[in-house]
Image (cartoon, rainbow, N blue to C red; front, side, top):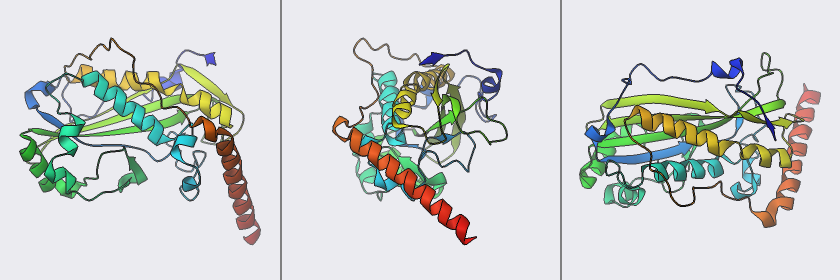
Length: 285
């Protein structure tokens, strides 16, 4: 794996936050805080390239199970959740996931695997709460004796420094993580809203727009350190010191080893089907 310093073109992508967030937000003043919802984007695509389908388009995504995909956003999302919960463990400002998800008002909320906004995916154990669900969230906070509800959105993307007008979709690819945070009080009033973003110094060289299986495995390993960076940015902004983990840190869930060859074959089958359908559409036109 090659190493590279940040390029200027990457630096300009780092988001410092929304104007609605103060420079220092003392989150302890708003505790107890309940993490109501945590979710991710649906695929690891090129940042802000909405035509990119290299992360497998939704029409085919169900053909390969999450545990078989090195670049599954659910796999990365579980890691991000584990790292975030590990960083705040023992801090009395936050209620545990179990406390929140086991109260009656939370259990009664309808299940959903897809969040309406941009087809994002809920991390396991969480449920969907839309903008008009403020009363339901209020009931949950009352049952928990909590003051504040928290939403966390992790997004995982690729950045290609050599990309020009979105024409190039392969080359030296860096990992990008965006963490979006919202805090609302029991009345639904927005208290805090900010975006955190960081990209990897290391990169993987991809030889085509659809990364080969071994390239995906290598590229996925770039994300853990970048996840740590955005979580640290958030903790610093809300005046919290991250817990120093004396034990083993959370690791990226392993790809199902017994399914790797099957996954590679499935990947090639999906790519072949996409190419065949694209060719058919071109002929029909």
